[in-house]
Amino acid sequence: KVLAENVKRRAHKEAKIVNDAKTLAEALKALEIKITAKAGGEKLFGSVSNIDIAEALEKAGHSVDRKFITSGIVKRTGKYSASVRLHRDVIVDLPYEIVAEV
Image 1 (cartoon, one colour):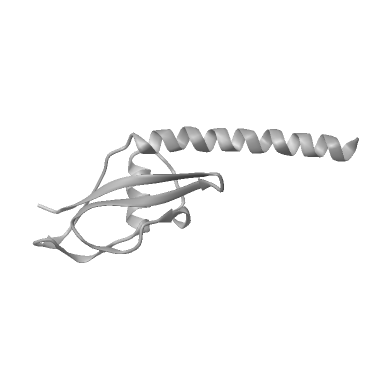
Image 2: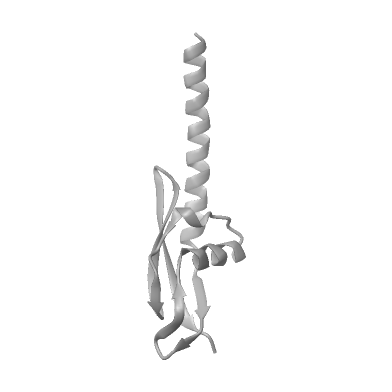
């Protein structure tokens, strides 16, 4: 009986976490992220990584740990896509754009 109750509780918690992650995923899909960086022409001075994307999401009001963002290191301006893992069942593609600082 105790084991059955524990499994039931764990399943209920897991369902709530997945629903929260799906809600956050829908909010992230609606965002338009623009990251400004110093550039000479199309080539950046430095690079843009998952840390910069996490900071841009923080400014937009969504707290996502940088460990869960997979984007690679980008060294040119343009449009790119990052993968954000909110839960093992909820992974969202986050489009973002890198523009040159004026």
